[in-house]
Image 1 (cartoon, rainbow, N blue to C red):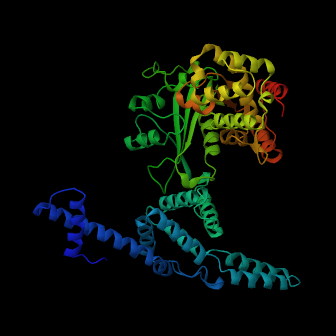
Image 2 (spheres, rainbow, N blue to C red):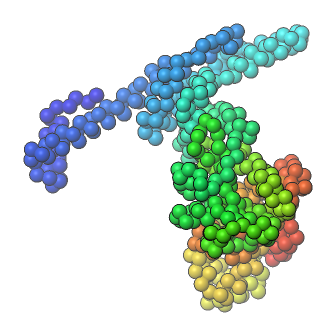
Image 3 (cartoon, rainbow, N blue to C red):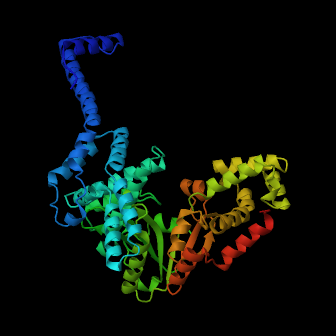
Length: 508
């Protein structure tokens, strides 16, 4: 603790007077005393936190029991786990990084022991099978990081699972931001992901339908977590859980009141081609459902709520469970489809235009006739000036105010979007994350919809275009296997036709 004395107060007060903050009075001196005492305490706490990291870790992260005693060692006191959680939560962002680096590097795998067992395994290759299997089991056990035991014990205390989910969110943020290039941090991330995948396996999750009668806190969280089409007010959320709508969430016993992944569904007669009719139409707010008008389920929003569960398969299982739930409620339901945004399309296209301009390839993206139309409607010369004008219009969204520009750009943007979804790849799979998600689930890239989301966000993300990924239930397993194993995208005639137009008009 930094010594607190009158010198601290006088120095602090003098500085404030110099800055003209206040005139020194008896009352202000009392305020300064409190402020300085608070500052001194905080600074001392930070120094103490940093210096005590190693002591705390040595105390709490116990050595890995020997192979022979691995199932006989008593668990550490619960207070150790609670102390670890409180200590970590008290740290600043930079301190957390230092703490996690120490945890993962100094309390991970005993590499020397692993090397010795690996050598022993090689020496036993000509021994009997029982001996080989025992040495392999010893080697497997020795690959357990010391901190993994601690993580397992934390999961058993109240709030422990949620703490570990949030801890992994911090680790993901560290690796994504490249705040640390430590391979030990990456190994910690993999260990946490493996544990969370076990604890959040689909058999341990509960499917919960959210209604207007659900707890207020849960409805509020559903609203806050909505990542695709923001909820504007209580009337909006009431409609999204009301007639002709369904809202489902996966929950877990270890995180009560916390929805893990949320799926919003619209019940319609046909496959919707615009989002406004789903999230902004209020005519059905107080009506009763007519079963005869329900033939289609539109999955129009799916949101993961816990950053720490990234990579843990939840969304695909949620869709499958919801399909079974809806089939049970509406046996005659024949069509299942998403109405999905296309995040990243605008950024991708603007990047392509910038690259083509830099390389002097303006003529390669559109046909000569289309470039002439762009030049005419923008009042520029063909070539680079027209391309730059197009980039400016697309960046600002100004093109949506001109009917002529809208008509001119519709066929261009539609085929470019089709190519983006179908042809742009990352490691052989769809570059667009939403496309990759639905295609992994076995959906068909079915239909692109013009003017499907005219909100500022929709125009900024994908020039207002949305896409239906359709789930033909008899084909999803085969489609999923074809995509995952052979990287083949199943697409409709409309999409393939647009892709063909792109290939015809653009020089790839």
